[in-house]
Image (cartoon, rainbow, N blue to C red; front, side):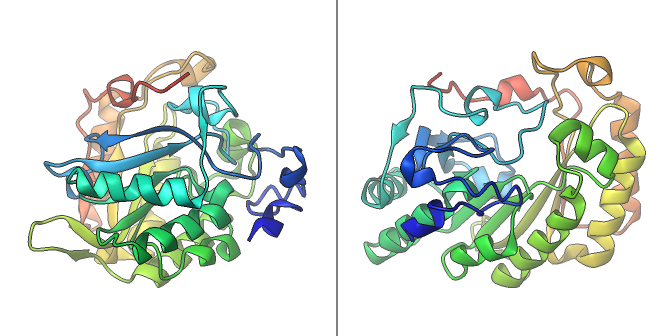
Length: 296
């Protein structure tokens, strides 16, 4: 699938960069996967992390580029400390995580490397990978790119960050975020079906949509919750996160946390929609506590 990197249109930016020739588009990355960190991670939702941890692979670069990104040290482009990995080395890493007892393989921000990552998952499965594979992404993803993972991925963990195009334009330079995200989540739900838990209480198949509460974003958040509950209801999990922590690049209203009152109000609002499959993060959670020690 290397030709998909030659005139890259894997994400909605559709840069057309020839990443096989050293050119880079919005994501800033070459035409092969670059991994910053591989580890057992315990900071995900309980049905993902469990007691054994999630076998997490953190890829560098990102096609969305939110100004408040908590992983900004690796999402802005190459750090110089990442490791280039082909499908063989990636598949070996997944199998090693499985041997360490990981509940799942958790691929964080892999979509701009989708062709190579899909190949690596297929190879790992042929070599004995039998734990669920999860894609952890921004939600700003093209359906045709997600189809590369069809039959390979068991769990999707997309964000749905914004409803308003004014917010998505200001914070992520993506005025079309909401419409793109709606189509992407539809495809994810089509691939995985409704929530399926194992006897151990861990998620085996399904979609968890995450929404990070932003300062000043109360009404935007309500629109997001309205959409998710009306379209999918309890076929999916909704994870309402209050961990927003201002990063060094944040100014103005983004320089402070959302109020505890706003977070509590949204939790009550979600409950009022009849959403049983939900995770509500405690207000005293901090994004900084959940940021791994990246190689940067």
